[in-house]
Length: 319
Image (cartoon, rainbow, N blue to C red; front, side, top):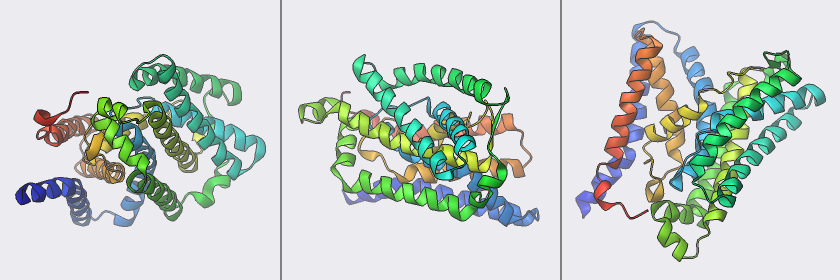
C-alpha cells in the first residue's frame, strides 16, 4: 500500500519534473548557442499565458469527462467584440468586461443547448465552432477593414508587459484553485466526471455542474481574449486560431487524464502550457521546421495519454 502511494505521488509530480527538465534544457541550449535568455523567457511567457489562462478555466469542463472544441473560436469572437467596444468607448475596462461577458455567454449557451437537446457537450461545441468561425468573418467585415479590426497599439502598450500578464494568470489560477480544491463544486465535478451514474443517484445535478464549468471556462476565455488583444492589437480571422488544440495538448501535457474525474488537477493547465511552449522553443533552437515540431508534439501527446491511462483502464467505472 505504501509503495502504491509513493508511485502515485511520483506520477502526480512527473509533469512538474518534465517542466523543470525542459526549462533546464532550454537554459543549457540557450547558453551554449549564446542566445538572449531573458528575451527567450519573455517570448515563452507571451506564448504561454493565453493558453494557460484558457486551459485553467477549461479544466472545469474536462473534469466532467467532456471537452469544448470551440474554445479558440470563442477567444477570437470575444477579442473581436472587445476590440470593437474599445474603438467606440476608448475604455480598457469596458473592453475587459465585454471580453469576459461575451465568453461567459457563449459558454453558458453551449451548456444550455446541450441540456435542452440532451446532447453530449462536445457535440454542441462542434456545432458552435462553425457558428463562431462564421461570426468572426462577419464581425471583421462589418466593423473592420474587411481583413482586420485594430485596437490602437498605444492604448494597450502599458499593459503589454510580463508582470501584468503573470498577475492576470496568477489571480485567475488561485481563484480557480480555491473553487476547485476547497469548495464542494470541485468535489462534485470530480465525482461526476469519475462516475456520472453514481453522481446522479447521489443527487448531484449534471446541468448545474455543466453551467458552473462553462461559466468558469468562459471567464478564462474572456481573460485570454483580453490578453490576446494586449499582445497583438491587430485582430484578424487567424486570431487565437490554434488556442483550441493548444488547450487540449496543454492539459494532457500537464498530466491530467482526458477522462476527467478524481485525478483532475487545476495546475495541469499551467504546467502543460509552459511545457508545450518550452518544447516548441527548444525545437526552434535545433532548427527543426514546424512540420517536424508538430509531429514531435503529436507523438509526445499520444505517449502522455497512454502513460496517464495505462494503470486506470482495468479500474474504469461504467460511464
